[in-house]
Length: 153
Image (cartoon, rainbow, N blue to C red; front, side, top):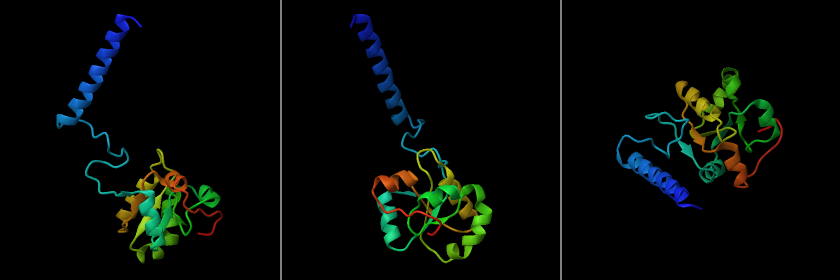
C-alpha cells in the first residue's frame, strides 16, 4: 500500500471522526439512536422482547398488526389479529376486549415494518393505549419464546 492510499484513508477516517463528533456535540446533530418510525415528540413506547414476554406471562393482551394470512402461519400465543391493512373492521371485532385490557402490546414483522407503530397510533386515536414490541416478530422468535399456529389466539 502506497503513501497516497494511506493519506486518503487517514483523511477519510479523520472526516468520519470529525463528522460524528460534530453530530454529537453541536446540539444540531441527528439522533443516531432514534427510531425512524417514531416522530420527534411522539409518545409511542417500544419495549424489548424480554419485557414483552414478562407482560405476556402477567396477562397482557397482544395484538398482531401483520396481515391475517401471516398471523395464521404463526403468532404469539394469545395474540389477537389486528392487521393494519384492515384496521377498522378488525378493530370492531376486538374493541370490547381492547376496552377491558389495561396492558396491550402490538407487534408486526419487525426490521422495517411500521405496521405496529401505525396500529398503535390508530388505537391511541380511539382512546386505547398500547406499547410496541421493538423489532417485532423477529425479536420474539430470536429469543426462543413460544409461538402458535392457526387461526386461534
